Every structure is written in C-alpha cells, then in structure tokens.
Length: 154
Image 1 (cartoon, rainbow, N blue to C red):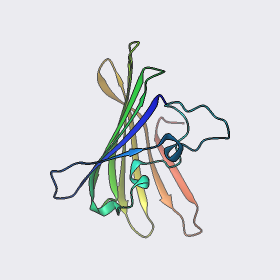
Image 2 (cartoon, rainbow, N blue to C red):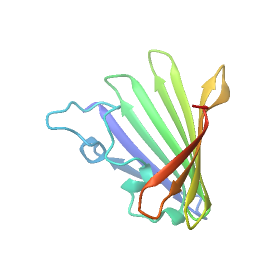
Image 3 (cartoon, helix red, strand yellow):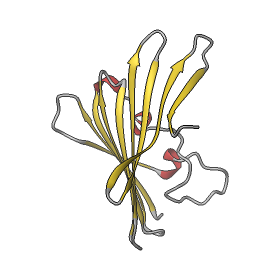
Image 4 (cartoon, one colour):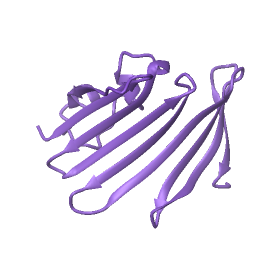
C-alpha cells in the first residue's frame, strides 16, 4: 500500500496530541475496484467526523495523507473555537516533484435562530493570502440553506 493516513487531535486544555492511523478503505468513499490514491473522495468532509469526540471538546486536528507512489503529501490542519462552532482549516499539498498548493477556509457561526454562517476562502498568490470566496449561509426553517455570495461578485 502506498497511501498512509494519520489523524492527530488535541483536546481543549491539553498539550498532548493523540494520533490515529486510518486505513484508506476507512477514510475514502471508494467505488468497487477503485485504485486508492491521495485525492480519492473522502467519506466525510472534515477530519473531526472520523473521531468519536464531540466538536466542542476539540482544540485542533491535523490530517495527513501521504501517497508514496504519487510523491504527494496533503496536510489539513483545523483549529476550533466557540464550542466547536467555528473553525479555520488550512490545507497544504506538497509534491516531491516541485510545487505546492495552499488553501485556507474560515467557517464562523454568526448567530442562532436562524443559524447564519460566514465562509471565507483564501488562496496564496506570490506568497500572500488572497480572498477567493466570501459568503453567508443561512439555515432555513424548512431544512434548506440559502447563500448570499459577497465575493466574487456575480
């Protein structure tokens, strides 16, 4: 197997990091006979969903996917606050052949009843964070969501 997945997490008030190794078959949502590669579709959207720990007890997670065959390492670091309602995700993809990608997503809960979330997505250009996307998402009474996009202006 050439793909290895490690999930580290830190609880609020602890200096200690716990480490779990996940099998690719447990991490990815694989089709029958699909080849396992670092960029296969994950079963869940966030590393915290692979843990049997309530979000409000977590301070940080670090998910690391190493694909020896493709010479790629992907690391997703998440910081939680406000009882796990808010988070910052930093994603870095490094290729041994050169080049890397950086992405940061901030998800901030602004209010309850109705729930309103602010989403900011940043990329790097010339080593400077550049706003790529900004929106507000509202949880509607019927269970749907509505989104107001601030940037880019449509």
